[in-house]
Amino acid sequence: MTITRLHSNPRLSGAVTFGDLVFLSGQVPGDARDASGQTREVLAKIDTLLVEAGSDKDHLLSATIYLKNITEDFAAMNEVWSAWLSPGQAPSRTTVQAELARPQVLVEITVIAARV
Image 1 (spheres, one colour):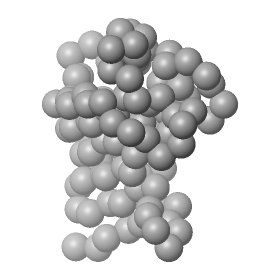
Image 2 (cartoon, one colour; image 1 turned 45 degrees about the vertical axis):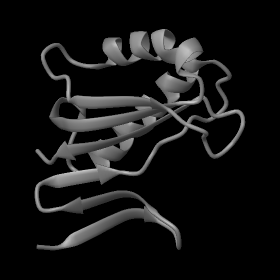
Image 3 (cartoon, helix red, strand yellow; image 1 turned 90 degrees about the vertical axis):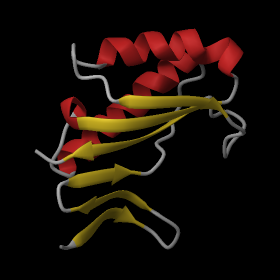
Image 4 (cartoon, one colour; image 1 turned 180 degrees about the vertical axis):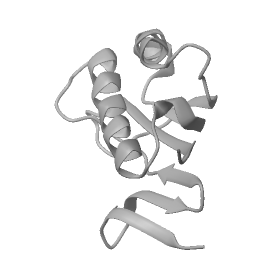
């Protein structure tokens, strides 16, 4: 089987496909300042990468969500996440608090999906 890497640089690829699987790197927000806005931005990036890789959010298998402050931002992130998911299509999911790459990043999400 062929491994295909999308949006690669020397350190990482934005997405990697292998067989019927799509692996996305952790996606971070653009300019939004709160957890709701950052979650919306990250999910939009995920939508774009999944389509480019031959999948979509309805084929998510697993998600890992990293929050800078789980106490302050979990509810806001979860509200946006739940609204984004199609009914009955929730993947397995882990949400953890983590020190993220830049101080202004509150939300980072990585997913694995099946190709359609």
